[in-house]
Image (tube, rainbow, N blue to C red; front, side, top):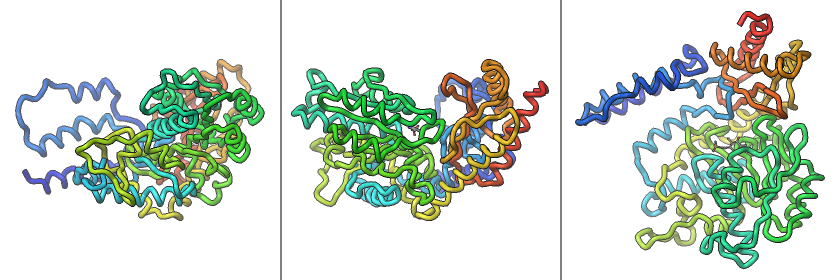
Length: 469
Ligand SMILES: *Cc1c(COP(=O)(O)O)cnc(C)c1O
């Protein structure tokens, strides 16, 4: 097999896709049904020519690719899969390291170990913390909460890792009403229950109300976990860590923070005050594939008490060499044994951007979100519902109309924009009303892109409100 020609073909196609940004719309060219049709064929019976396989893959996939890496893709907090990270990831695939074990995969394990140290410095979290490299914040929340579950029960003399939850002292879980849905999933996977929680009331920005939190803490009678948030998915708001964390700790609760994107405010001097005192918590979940721009998938489970982290996750077997002092097995901090060497792309992105590059990126994205919000709010009939302090804006159209008409108009503007493809925005329900969500988290998004995006949104609104769309 001509490996060089095959890899060159893949690299050429990858570059062609990434260079087509200005010619492509910010939406898939074809929908799911068309994509299914493109891939549909009977099970292949015989071996094929390698380059023909890649050629067929590109031909079938390309029309159904979304421009999620584009500079005006604001649908979700999705990052940009930066070319430097992608190049490192191509090598990661080619190198084919099973990154579970330090002696079997020394380079992969070392890249994680050093990246872990860099991450703690960038986010300014306790340097003794351990970091698990997982698929994303969903599994990072799961991993951190598994450590929390184990530790709060161990403190009551119960070994949940060996004995499970049957017969264990009940754990009180406090969580904000506007927490991300994946945190509830993590609680579900851990046997802690999605609904068996005390939901704490939040304010207009989705922040936990301190008075309600204190009332929730007063009900604690045994092991407890409190879950806070850095960066609400709609408003970008932060819980008041300086007030809430010490209060929870005083009641003996483990404090976990979901900071999938918001924790990166810590890496940006101007935004850092938003996440002040978050380092007082016990564990933190965050993503690499959002603001750090690593390719999919990459998230980090960070736990202050390394032993609690390892107890919850360690996989041991007689055929696996044991890590000694000074060595680190990637598999000790994550649910999986065999896994991708995510440390390479993380290392490459931090090496490339450096501390100042990451700070500049976060700052620039936040500025872009603010500019879009400012331009939209200046138009009569458009209302920005949140305080745009980070990278998130939620917007309502048809101000002055009745609630139903406003909801319809907001949905119509979103639908028209998604059809036109100049900018990708999503919708959500916020406080019972339909809103447009704008999430800025791409390395290419600057003030110029923000202006183009705002013009496109204003244009769509004008067409919808004049009945032309
Ligand atoms: C994106 C996100 C998650 C889930 O992260 P994944 O990377 O999708 O697993 C959790 N919490 C918040 C606040 C998020 O923005």
